[in-house]
Length: 205
Ligand SMILES: Nc1ncnc2c1ncn2[C@@H]1O[C@H](COP(=O)(O)OP(=O)(O)OP(=O)(O)O)[C@@H](O)[C@H]1O
Ligand SMILES: Nc1ccn([C@@H]2O[C@H](COP(=O)(O)O)[C@@H](O)[C@H]2O)c(=O)n1
Ligand SMILES: [Mg+2]
Image 1 (tube, protein in one colour):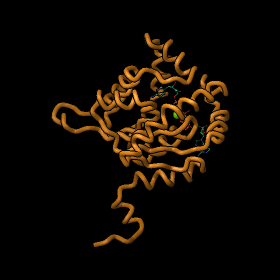
Image 2: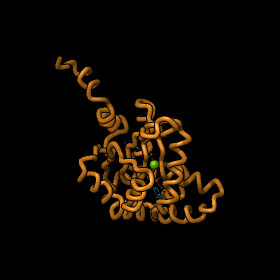
Image 3: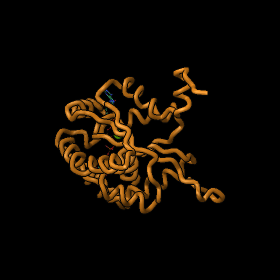
């Protein structure tokens, strides 16, 4: 994040969106390893905040258990702090913005526009199967909450993807494929253009 002396330099932010269980966290771990980004999952930050004994803990737990979106003010503060603490200037913001309120508030507060939105497109049937097999002890990984999360995704999160689509900022990946196949597609998106030319051995001099 900006420090004294580079006040003008804004960090690079990629929003990573997709339905519950589409593989956002899995692919972000791969991107971090290969491309030097810091991964910030809004859901993970909220779960950590709840565990920390924060005054917002009960509200966060109730919202997560109902699959509802926590007020932007809370989530944005957690994201800003994590960005500052990281010392990096390239971020994958996973699971955010989840609704129009998230999107507008982040832009207003941070003045940061995403470089692009990485969107993992996956069928509900596949996402449900993946979540039910996840076994990470998440309280919201039960069929009742999963259904509520799917509804919120369709009604509140997809319109955000559409908004960025209208600005030509969405990079869509078929996330129904295997982890390795999805990452192959992701790599193409993150590999700088000049390196793609080098790899294909057809640089125009
Ligand atoms: N392409 C894939 N094929 C099969 N299983 C996958 C794939 N990608 C991820 N998974 C598995 O599916 C489960 C959900 O993946 P992950 O946690 O990355 O999804 P997510 O989009 O971050 O979900 P959430 O929004 O609920 O946090 C995990 O158990 C993961 O190992
Ligand atoms: N911007 C966000 C992101 C997440 N939440 C809440 O956390 C839950 C889990 O999120 P995952 O990305 O880890 O699946 C989600 O269902 C919301 O309740 C949020 O409020 N705002
Ligand atoms: Mg996740």
